[in-house]
Length: 223
Image 1 (cartoon, helix red, strand yellow):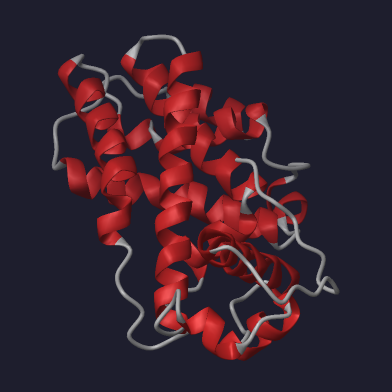
Image 2: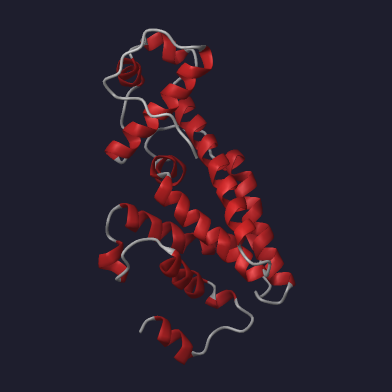
């Protein structure tokens, strides 16, 4: 996703209406990436952009509204990445499913600021709106992929929503560990790349497979 970088020391006194809104969103993401959390004030954002405090509030009622806008923008980017990875994958249901795992991990790697707002920082502020409405498209894509695997006989039957919740745990954990620089210590992996992602995908789907790997085959994954 292409973004416009704005230097922290750059000062501007005027913006077109949409330009200021975009600039505030981009600066907020920069702060989140730098600090690994959304601990900044609206006044700090305004000062860094060289505009008045009131100008920022014309676009966002409060910080919760700003974080909600970032969450929405992030989930839109995730949905686009899902489509991109599925388009490149083979048509078999299991490969389409794996593509979603790869997309999730790549999203965390490429857009860590948005990832933090969407999945790691929701409890920082009180009364932050739920991100569920923004997540509807990407979640439906995951549900559809699971259902396709079930219909083709690859996955066992079961509640799709509960399966999706289980599936989300491993890639989320790997993404968070990788963003903290702990992945190599934990798993002996250099970073989130195609092979580690494939390795993780094969592991997490085993309880869901109609024909899971044998104990010998599973042991080989950890060799």
